[in-house]
Image 1 (spheres, rainbow, N blue to C red):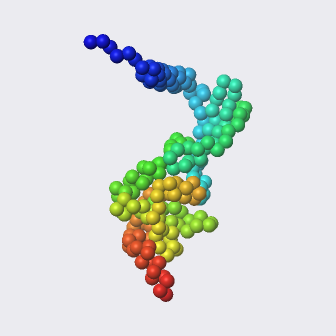
Image 2: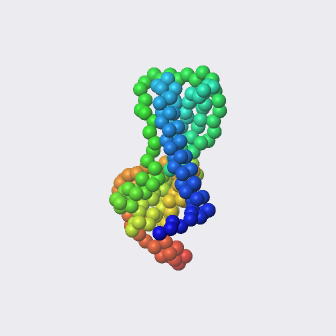
Length: 200
C-alpha cells in the first residue's frame, strides 16, 4: 500500500512542534543554569512590608553581571506587579533583630476558594480614610459585598474584588461572627431593600 505524500501544511505543523519542543528544552536548560550560577553571595535581598490601606509591597536588590538592580513590586492578589527598577551600586543592609522570611500573601484565588467552601468565614477590608470597613462572604457560590454602613449588599465578582484589593489593600480572612456584620445582612434581596427604602 503506497504511503500518502506529506502535505506542505503537515510539514509546517511538524516543524512547529519540533520548534516548540526545542524552545521548552532551552528554557529548562537556561533555568537550570541560572539556579546553578546563583550562590549565597548573589541571592537577591528582599524586603517585604504591608502599607496601611495598601497592598503588600516588596523591594529586591539583585546582583547582575554589571552591578545591582533595585526593583519594587506590588501585590495584585495574583502575583507581584513590577512598579519600577533602577541600577544601583554598593547596597548595604543592617538589622538589630531577627525578621521573618518574606512570603507571598494568600492569593485572591486561594482566599475565594476557601470562602466558597466555608460559609462561616468572610473577607474583611479594613476601614480607610475614604471607605468604611467592608465584608465579603459567599452564599451559594455567589460573592456578596457589603460596607459596614451600607444600606444593602451587592454582588461582586473576582475581577472587581481584585481591583478593590489593589485600591484598599489585602483583605483578612476571618470568622463571620468576628466581623461587625451578620449573616442575615447578606440574605435580604437588594431589590427588596431598595423598594423598602423608597416607601419611607
